[in-house]
Image 1 (tube, rainbow, N blue to C red):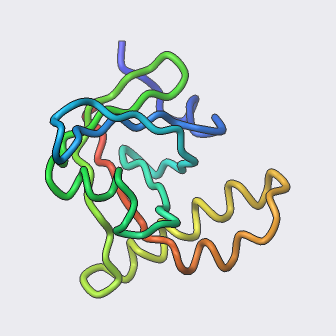
Image 2 (cartoon, rainbow, N blue to C red):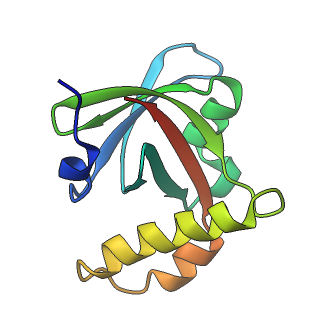
Length: 122
């Protein structure tokens, strides 16, 4: 039976597993996310200096876990210079999700972070 991503959209965190660019070993982080269709969006406060972003630049195949559901996907950095509309969407939906939960002072973070998308294989 196919997974209904809408039922997972309100979870606080997802767990992103990348492949280490040097070690080749799995590396998992807990991170905020928002879903739009079959695409999961995250924001990297460390921009392209974050290890997980550096890992996906070398190995875009990732795994995402939300609750007990696990998905394979292709990760990619969303760049404003090539897709301003998707860049704005990623920032807006992550910001809106967590601001609605009472998180404070996210506007600066949402504007300076690097958006990353994972196209989920569902």
